[in-house]
Every structure is written in structure tokens, then in C-alpha cells.
Image 1 (tube, rainbow, N blue to C red):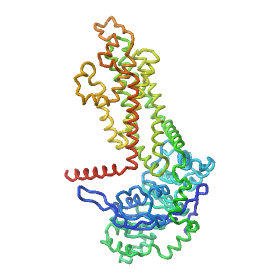
Image 2 (tube, rainbow, N blue to C red):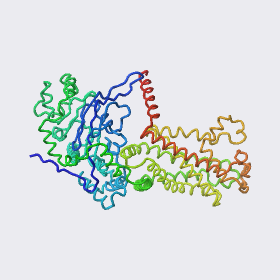
Image 3 (cartoon, rainbow, N blue to C red):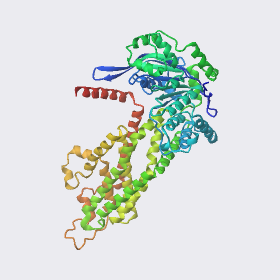
Image 4 (cartoon, rainbow, N blue to C red):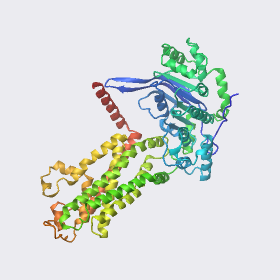
Length: 633
């Protein structure tokens, strides 16, 4: 006798109304070249009910992931057709509040245990609606439901593939969403893990939720677990109904499934035309209104979902939206709470990645010792003033590249995590970005002190407190602005492109920082002077020169030196054309550029996650141009 998992509801979380999803004549096309387009979906229709586990099947390129994205609202701008929620037109903004989308990749925050990840998500999603003790009870209940209680203290980096997949689901169950979308949740799992995953999704659906997932060909046993199987082929629906009933469905068009053959494998072979072209016949039967289930299957579903029917009194979409709004379904915590939770999470992740911190500390120390040795004792040597100027330029180059590179390497990957969490309404993007901006400052300060402590002493710079403070301010500001430039580049590019473009974009700033010094400034073209004022490194260099050389006593000239032209440092500053610089003006200029870079990178990040119509249009034009270039080549 087959044992069915018990029905499960999450007792410590708020109840949610059932949500039925119906779609009619949904089509989706993508441009292909200047004039052509490719049809991904062709007038597909269907009805997915609360309490049911629905599987989207189809060969590669059939359109199942596209349909899932459209239903979830993840990709809906170019789609046509109707999508109804409980019989009424979908309000996409409201629908996103009640649904959660678990993507194919297991995107889990690193360096946190399972329980810590769940607590962070609970604090973000539930806020003050539950006290801490009830949050812990809710977490324990979900971990037990998804069989993660034994791995609750395991770091996410050490989880198996099945555990990572279950943790992805657990994180989205914390505020009990009525609708769950999953993109191929069994990808990369072994047979046992696949079976556990599908049965757990079945258990979640039986709690009254609408669970829809795209999936590769399941085994015959798993095929029978799904309440609804929706099969796509070449962008059209060729079957919808209870999985095992596909055998009788195929008999009606003259195709007999061999005994002891997996029906899921067989219909995939039919979709791939391995036994002839039957697609038009299958589509015709579906479009002529054939019932989705046999009478026996209706009875089976009704018996297994009595708890869903008991809650079906809330049926209108207005009532659903009203209930969700009254319970403050999204952004349960305040902006400041989100900011603090995310900041502490980032600090904890940084602290736990101790090997990376140690490598950065060693890098700052070794480079500091190397630079200090190269410019050893030149700060008070009248014959080495020009070399001392090179030392200051070397410092700003160091604080340009070294803080920028980690951002170029890490942030493009971090965006994928942010995309999942932000799309599923964990937090406001502004709260995350503010936390990201603040969280790196302590590390920048400490590492900057390590570098400056060694180079300042080794190069024999003046031991005057105000000059040391100004030196430190300029270097740290340069570091933070460079990090912001890295964010600006990484916000729109993948890792490989970002690592290439970051240094390339930095080169003009380096050249313009020292261009036109001295008497040559008057001969510089006006347009170049304008560009020079846009180089933040120029302000950094001016600030360092002002802080370290202006208004100092004459330097002594060693007896071994024949020429000491710049023992008068004020004369050197004047000769470089920097006698009129004001330190705090340079600081303000760097601060303005910092705000400009940070604001621009935030804007680009927001456009990447939720693009405006202008950005969508530009992206569309870009795709056409790209396709045209590809064709002409």
C-alpha cells in the first residue's frame, strides 16, 4: 500500500487565502535579427489550482521556463494574453507580493549556517509581527518539514545539493506565501534527492498553496505524484491533466505506450517526433476543451485537499489582496531594521571569510613595505622631492586599483543573490545598497591604516598630526571612490567583462591626474582641461600635495647630492601649478564624485533588477543590433 505524506500547515505563521491561477491565449516572441522574430509560446491556456502540485514538462526549447517566468511575473513585458487570479485580471504588483519564485540555481548566502540564514530571512520578512520565540518555532517547524533540522548548524558552503535546494525553498516559506514557482528544482540532484524534493513540494501544496514547477523528465513514480502535468512542445500545450492518464490520452490518437515504459519518457519522445508528427492532433484535443482529469482523479484530489476546500470561502481576488495588505505581506521590517540586519549579515560573512581577510591584510602589508622601501627616507630629503611626488602618485594608484578589484570580482555574483531576494520582496533595494556601502568602510579603514602606517614611516614623511590626518583622509576617500567606480562598472557587467573594463576605465583617470602639471598647463586645450576636472585622482593628488608639502620648512640637502632644486617645497608646489589648491575643496570634490558614483551605480542596479520602459526599449534595440551583427558576420 502506498503511503501518502500527511497534510501540513505552518501553525506559527499567518494563514493565507487560496490562489488559483488561470491563463488564456498567452503568447511570447523574441526578436531575431532586424525583421524576424521567434515564437516561444503560441496561445497557451491553463488553470492551476490552490492545493495542487503542478509540473511543467517539455523538451528543451519547448517554452516551459518562459511560461513559468511569465506566470511568476519575472518576464512579462512582451507577453500577450490574459492571466487571471481567482477569476480576475492579475494585478502584477499585488501578485508579486503573494508569490515567491525559486530559481534553478541554488543561490544561498555563503558563510552562514542554515539556522542563521533562516533567522536573517525571518527578521527581514516577519519583522515585529512575531516575537523571537515564535520566529524560532516557525523556523524549527519549516526545517522539520523540509528535513533540514539535522543540518541546521551546518554552513551553507558545506550543504549537499539536495540540502541547498531545500534551504532555498525553506527561506521562501517563512512568510507562508500562497503561491510558489520553482524553476527545475530537481536539476543536479540524484534520484533519492529528486524523490524527496518532489514529495516535500507535494506536502507543501497540500497545505493549501499553489505550487508550480518546471521539471526535467521525472520517473514514473514521481510522475504520478503531480496533481497536474502540463506538457509543452514547440510552444504549444499538447497535454494537461493527471500524469498517468497520458497513456489513455495517447491511445485516443492511436499511440500505445509500451508496458513497463515510463509515461513521462514516452510523451517526451512523442513531443520530439520520434514516432511521427502527432503534435497537431494533441493540440487539437486540448483546444477542443477536453477535461483535465478523469472522474477518479478529481476524487483523489478532493480527498487529499479537504483543508484547502475548507478555506475556499475567501475566493475573490479583492478579498485576497485585502487580506494580504492588511497583514503587511511584504517588507515586514522597517527600512532601518532591514539596513541593520543586512549590514550585520555582511559583517558576519566578511569575518567568517578569514582566509580572504588575511590575504588582503598581507597584500596591504607587503605592498606597503615594498613601496616604503622603494621610497625609503625621501620625505625629508631635499634632493629627492620629485621622487617624493612620485610616492604620492603611487599611493593614489594603489588606493585606486586594490579596493576596486574585489568589487569587480564579487559584485556581479552578488547581484544574482540580490535579484532573487529583491524579486521575492525580502527587502528594499535602497536598504541593501546602503548596507553594502556602509559594511565595507571598517575594512577599508583598517587595511588603509596598515598600508599607511608602514609607508608613512619608511618614507620619512613629516610626523605632524594634522598632516597625518589629511594624508589618511585623502587616501581613504580615494579608496571609497574607487570602490564606487568598481560598483558602477560591476552593476551592469558579468565578472569577466567587469574585470576587464574596470582597469580600462581607470586609465583615463590616471593620465588626467598628472597631465598638464607645471608651465605646460596653459597650453592644454580647453576640452582636455574640462576632462581633467573630472578625474577624481587629480583631486586626490592635489590633496596629498597640499597636505604633505605646503607650508613646510626648507628641506636639508645631503652633502653627497650635487643638485637640490626643490628644497623649498612651496616653490615646488608653485612650479607644479598647485599653489592655489585648497585641501577642503579637494575633499569636497572627492565627496561629490563619491556620491555621484554611488548614486549612478544604485540607479543602474535598480534598472537591472526592475528596468524602466526606457531601459527596456534600449535593451530591445541593443538585442536587434546584436542579432543583426551576428547575422551579417
